[in-house]
Image (cartoon, rainbow, N blue to C red; front, side):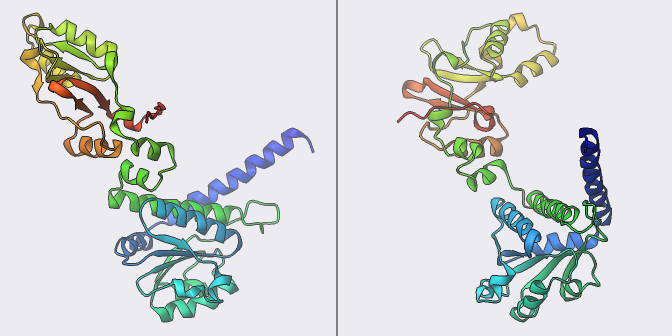
Length: 327
């Protein structure tokens, strides 16, 4: 088989899966919204269960839920009938993934789950399937065409289940107002988590990296300092080097909007006094929280005699630059 034939076949596989995804996208409706609502009000945990390849997808969905602060676990149907049903409580939601809705191992545990009192959300082909009839909420995937030549190997069906799981999880993320620092809290080993678990002193700019001008600096001098240090602001210091205020890009724009003669204005005339500060020993995640609460992009670390020891910018917390921790 030549390379062109193989490439065309691979593209056909992708096309088939994309076609199925478009179909389930068009099927989303009231049941999807009901599923979001019931999960939002869940007092227990979300339990994912499925057999075979669907089980693998369930593990991924459970992992995504947990990473967003939604308690979630995977329950293997085979283990469930041998004692692990004790994982399920009446306050839980059991989300079942089964394309056919007729998976024997799944149907075997459904009566027990119903008896316990947990709600059942199913991702399956039809509400008329055995699983669909037993479920409180059914997100129908419809008739899915698998991408292999026999139409038998789980491919399109698992892709659709995975994408639906992502759609549910990320919709819940939006409803719950999950922020980057919340996500980082559950990912302490990830790049963002590592960064936000550092101390402010580990990520702040120091020494010559700190943008600063004197009170009597002209606006062109202010603009030059902001541009050269590339942090979107500059501190304003008195003759003794103590922090007196801050000037941001926005302050300069507002000054120009007023059509002020910038050559008659000094840094002291347009600065904001008493910029927001933070202790260098605080966690970076605390700095991010303060910035988001106050809707600002920088904080100043003040040392002795009100001199700046450092400045931390929003981009320092969320960017890709690596920082060395000094002990």
